Length: 123
Image (cartoon, rainbow, N blue to C red; front, side, top):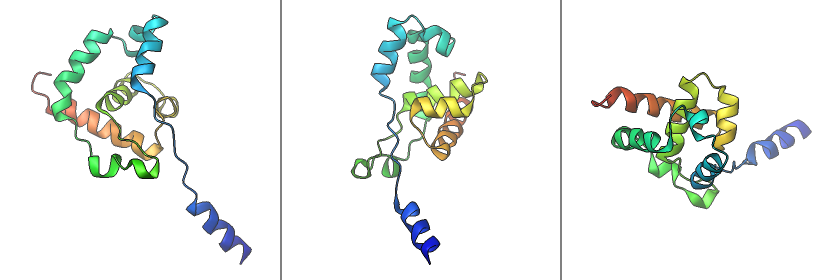
């Protein structure tokens, strides 16, 4: 009985991750002159790639924009961040922790990022 009560309490608690603030993240990398090392491209190239991919990146806004439960939407920049870092050989543990994502949200980002690359005629 005690185990059932304890497991119910553990199941009910939701851990809300703090998503990375993209603007602060970029400012920090630029100030430290690390953006190009981090993404293997400069900020203008990243933004150009993002512009090409943005129309092809699908975000489920119904699920991801529910701020009342502490969750914030996963923005296009975070999806591209995860995709580029993962395709470059980064560990999903490090990438998702940096972005403030759960394991399932991280793989959601990778799926949509790679799908956007595949569906972008300019690439």
